[in-house]
Image 1 (spheres, one colour):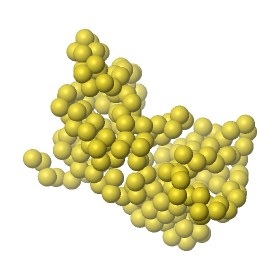
Image 2 (cartoon, helix red, strand yellow; image 1 turned 90 degrees about the vertical axis):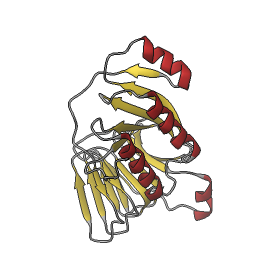
Image 3 (cartoon, one colour; image 1 turned 45 degrees about the vertical axis):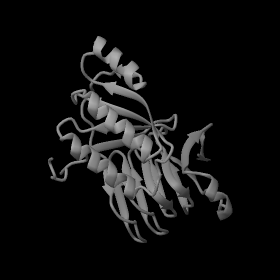
Length: 225
């Protein structure tokens, strides 16, 4: 078994507009590193992904039936999450049709695009006075406290409570979103839109898993899931 820790992001996590998450697996790392990375993310995520719907994007990573089964079982049994789709960047043939039936997960071929910059990952709480800027997505493994600022070209994902200022889609991307366990900031921005979400009754927070701020009908709205 390879016990090395991955030096890069083993699994890039992206959010889709339909509420699903896309896990993009690094094609160059051993599978055991992928599993260890997911185990660590689960411990740091404060159960953010519990009951989530997840798309696995293999890209050009070789398709291994046993690895897909291991991923499915890990996400189902520990995360209580569901794999809704597998995406492949290489040629699709009859084997994948058979594999799709065996594991009960749709498999689709997708065109390979140029590699995008990796998301900026902050592995701690952002305290007052902290300013984080990311050209693409920004992931915070902790809270964003009042007085802290997080700015990203695309989505902002906070595995904790967002109480500071968050600006997603900073270069004009109105499709960007802000994800957090609870959104209670002094101000949030998406592209050139600004909003101050109302303070919430804390007794209602037990019934939701996370919140998402996005642009709907020309204004920022916060939706609970």
